[in-house]
Image 1 (cartoon, rainbow, N blue to C red):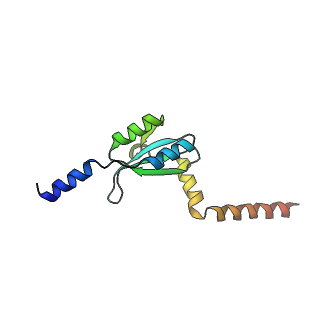
Image 2 (cartoon, helix red, strand yellow):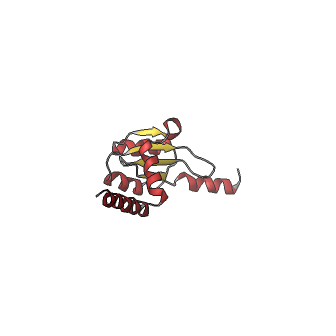
Image 3 (cartoon, rainbow, N blue to C red):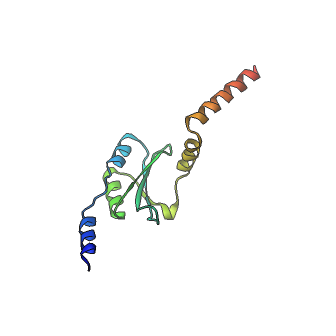
Length: 120
């Protein structure tokens, strides 16, 4: 084992992920579910939290044990995203918000108001 390997191992051991943003998200929302997302070539292993409306936050974790401990402590159900997939409400939320967000909503409201005036 080289010195650089020892150095990397020493510093990677003690790094604990910062789960404070996930704690804040879980504390201010209702209907939270947790999903463990698998590690990919570009993303680390993550814990995804989804609220009842489909809004979500994710944070890096060291391993599934971190996710289990976090969710157990917060009384949040935990699922494996690679097994059951993502909830439809999250997909719908991202589709709705991801396209144009508030601008799209303003356009929809303006369109509804125009239709109501035309029907009078």
